Length: 235
Image 1 (cartoon, rainbow, N blue to C red):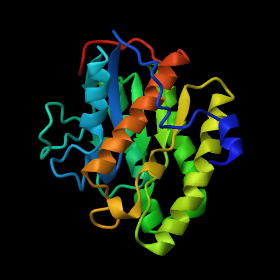
Image 2 (image 1 turned 30 degrees about the horizontal axis):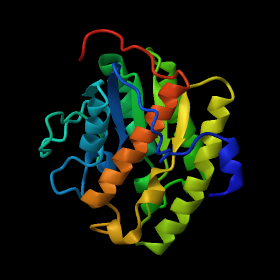
Image 3 (image 1 turned 135 degrees about the horizontal axis):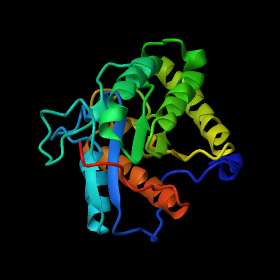
């Protein structure tokens, strides 16, 4: 890992033993098909792994979102993952979802379709920044955990992914510098080319590692005081 990243934000896979307990975690998994769970054998993606880790610590966990993973075998199917969507269309769905679902945590993994489709790649970090800002500007207070993207077997897409991933810590740090609750989770790095079932989507073992990566980032965010009480009844 490049040294400057240590000066930005704590990256994912903290492997911290300092987990927390007794909190309510209303989580919006936000993104496209990887968030939805495409490629996982049971349709759960990383969501069940993240849920179970937090619940085992003694927390109340509720996934929220307007696009439930209907094929998922997990008890909580809710997600704001939209297969095929780019950053901007995911952001539009998020703006509809936030007033109803009111998460105190959002896990963001978005941009793969922009990179594989070569769609406005140069502006992708700025477009991600606008998504984060819009997410933060909704009440309630929300901890936003932003992940890097996994690799891709398309070499041109992979080059674009590397450039996008390199820009994400700076996008996050700009918000941290203004006091916003944003944390960078380098979950993309836990997925290798051999872990991809179709060149883009992770297999079950890689999804489990992504779930652990998001969990470690949330634990770190809570340690920083970035886990607000949930507002209102569960949606």
